[in-house]
Amino acid sequence: MKEPINYIVIPGLEEYPHVTYTWVIMIGFVILALSLRGGFKMIPSGVQNIIEMIIYELAQFVDSIIGKEGRKFFPLIGALGFFILCGNLIGLAPGCVSPTSNINTNVALAAMVFLIYQSVGVYKHGFGYVRHFLGPVWWMTPLMLPIEIISHLARPLTLAVRLFGNIKGEDLVILVLGFLVPFILPMPMIAFAVFTSVLQALVFILLSMVYISGALEEAH
Image (tube, rainbow, N blue to C red; front, side, top):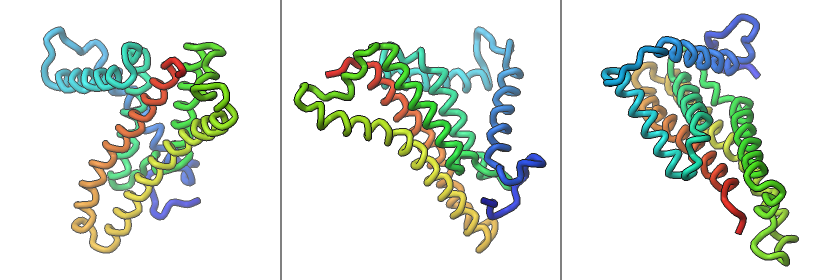
């Protein structure tokens, strides 16, 4: 499906702007990492202070949700959070599109979270992980098993659709307002979109951590 306006894209990928900007964000992260490599000091200052504060607060957030094993999943949660945040915000720049406004990007992210937390559950508990689906007592198994299966299968769907709906909706509203009154009317909506972009990134990683934490817990 063609986008409603012409975005800056890679030749040959005109029909897939979300792919272009996914690569833009990934390449940007690589360049940032290479530029910062070896530049950190024992006594932080300037940009290093900001980076360390963000990393520290995010690490504390992960620990508070997942617990003592949270640091193992910090690279995953951090990568998800920063990618989704940048993916949400990049669409606010003229000529750019949010990769998270495309359902395919979000399904890929949600499916990855689903496979990882299920794998974590199996790795942690072995065959005993199946008890998470059987309910608290054996005679409730016929009722709880289908409910739990549907619940788990719905998780990646809700993760993907929630992010897609919010970001795509914001982009369309800003686009319409820009056609009506350029430069003036869209500004309040852009400011609101910045807030919701941060919020949606937090919601995605928060739910991902809740799912991982649930997989690590013992079945009751």
